[in-house]
Length: 591
Image (tube, rainbow, N blue to C red):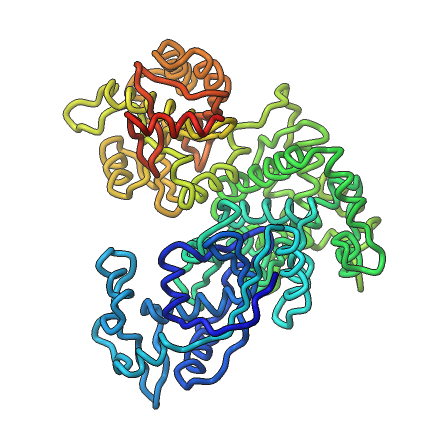
């Protein structure tokens, strides 16, 4: 049922926002993409009392999912929270937060910061702004399919959407969801599916020019850092088209003829609907297997170019004469050559210097398609690339993923922890950070076991992750660098990847011996026996920038577990003992 459009004041909307009532579903919503000027133009229209377009919300309870209007609401709330000023009568003026009691209460809570030493709106202007009634329609539904279809119809013809954004808008096929999931992990904005509106900036794309203070810097993503795509390409979701291209090539069994018409057909929006064809293939091969294989190859390429190509951009290697042009097709060729060597032939790279030399100016050796890309031309190019690099790959006896093939997964876990703190925990290691006494910290080890127990109590069949060798505070990263004499510790957002090699050195054993020691300590601990069996099978070393981290995957069973007769649970990022009436709440998670 749809309510007739009504006026909702900015004050009413902002209070919904800060009371965690406005949500975004990433299955179909794109990222925050408005420029600063677009935000200012909207706010100026409101200040001048001009009408703005209708906002559409969907609701099933007292919470609201934003179907249309995310960019507008973000702009309005950003102005209230002093993210930018607006020119009024030739003078830049900011919202005066103290004149709006509820916004001032958010300052008191430390949720927002008030700008100082700027010009503000008058009290009358503040009152007019927060009292401005914009049109809103509330769509009351119990059906996710209805919400998906509503979003698709509203956005699939949007003027500002790129062709790839049009394809993805409201599309919830297995193929489109897989594209979205893989692309977000490679970009570095992986998160849970449903987010609060205030969490969107953390997973949206910024650049050195736009300076929105969003969580993802375009120039630091693999795509732009290595010149595979330009910043404007990334903002228009060209990376998702590259991922779609790779998924179609690997699942359909031959290089995809990457034309606009062909993409439209497999997204179900072209004249020949082939969307079912690719979904059937995804079902047959398993969505999880496809994702695992594609990310494993990407991770090895990350490892290759970031840590073994002496700081040279991939773009300057593949095409030294590219200038300002991206190298999307040359990258596709390299990726598919590596995919066939690694996944189909079970080989692993070993001589990175020779691989780099072999790839030098490979662009000049490839067949260039004039108007469109053909399967035959792409097959020929992949064969050329394989021929150049295959002698620097060797057959591996193991069918399991190497320690460097988890790079993207690892980055995704770090990013997801920002919005799913209860599911992830991080420890710098097992040794004390006391300069005068570096010894195995039994108290800290006991806390780690308690945390494992807490992660096992997330609920039936839930999965939690504990990472050893990662700091989540910069001061701890600096302290580890100082104590253990290591420099250039890789940072990823707020995390420092300090690794466990330094602790193996303190113990005077090899890294493998140290990992075996940790595993045996966990196996002989007082953790519940079934839990110990599950986690010791899922202890995985991950090598990131030359530092090895232990990932302990904790899968919950059918009932809560106790550790030393105590029941633990996760409260946000903290491990807490559960007592009294709250024990029943934990058992409900398993019912």
